[in-house]
Image 1 (tube, rainbow, N blue to C red):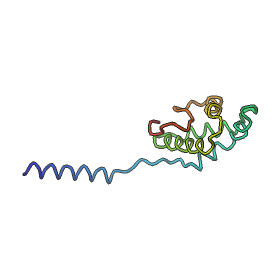
Image 2: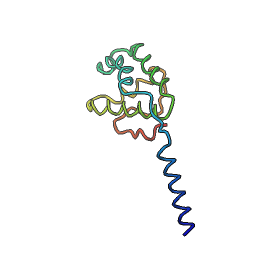
Image 3: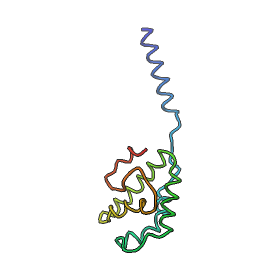
Image 4: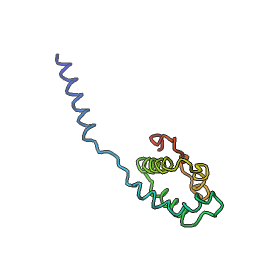
Length: 120
């Protein structure tokens, strides 16, 4: 009986720690992601026939620099996924090539099927 009581208290303590533990929140919003990438729209809409603008690359670089934590990177990933799903006819290969053309290496591919929970 005493062991059961200790176990119950231990479970309550652990549950209490989980409930009051601060959650890591992303500081980057979808609005910021969209705003950063708007300058890339002309390049994507042209099918890659227009050169990538410096403003596009600045947006990609700024977004990459701002995504310092795992929650930030996952938030950016989720926003990119939402954008990709909103435009099913988009050329995802072209979109995925933008960071590399801007000299930025991101740890995931821009694709509507990506599992953003695996982005770290």
